[in-house]
Length: 56
Image (cartoon, rainbow, N blue to C red; front, side, top):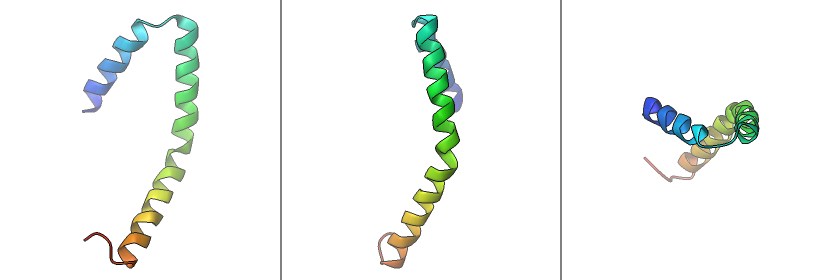
């Protein structure tokens, strides 16, 4: 799945001007920095839902 997404991303970036590519990659780095926080939030939400009896 990741390889396919990577190929799609490269194809898209090949069609975009260089200035936009730099901006996209910069924003991606910002998003990657937030990933651990997003996982913590998702885990806390999952645990809270399970405690309330939602899910299996």
